[in-house]
Amino acid sequence: MNGQLRFADSGEAADLAAFLGRLVHYDRAAVVRLQARAEGGALAVFGRPPSFDVLAVRAVRLAAPVGRPLDLTVSAGELLESVDEVAAGAVVPQPVTGPPWAGVLPPRGGWEQVPGLPGAEAMRAAVAGAVAEFRARDAALPPQHRTRSERDRIGRDIWSRALGDTELPLRAVHAAQSLGFLRPVRTTVPARAAHERPEPVALFTCGGWLRLSTPYGSVAMRRPGRTGGLGALLVRPV
Image (tube, rainbow, N blue to C red; front, side):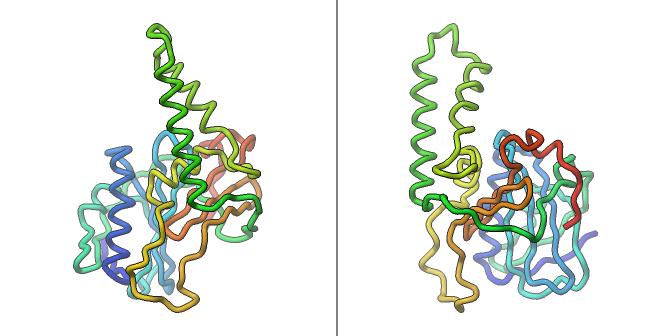
């Protein structure tokens, strides 16, 4: 299915391009799953950056509903190449056969906010501290122990730690930071109506899922100890 996408403004197009660019940076063969309701005003873009074991979600406001349901998996690189920031549009590439994660999406409803999440600034500081610790521990390794397996062990030890009083592993926060979801909210964009203003950073849970939501996107993952990762989940319609 090919078609034209018209975004609400050039800023939405630029944010989508930045998101796709980061996915392609981590994986040149990255794919994304696109979903939009026939009468809805937003396009949901799902991707899975390697190493983080999370599902990244970017919602893009549309200038008008797509007219018919959209649900397909496409090349992230091809979609990125088609994004026209000036015209605030893009061309939907031909669908591709998606990897297993593309059939594993978090539930659409039933999310409940949970307490204990630090603010965005504190989360960025936590990620910076974890990166610094990793570098220090890596530098302290004797030459004969500076192997991929040992570095992976250090990484697992650091990034599996829970953030504050929550179940959220630091790797989910690292993913949000790396994907540009934790950057400060723009103050130069035109003022929006109260119902359109970005929501603050928040943590939600639904069954075996956790979701870190920010004004620029979300990362979702299985709660620690639940089936060990995204790959073991069942396909869930959304």
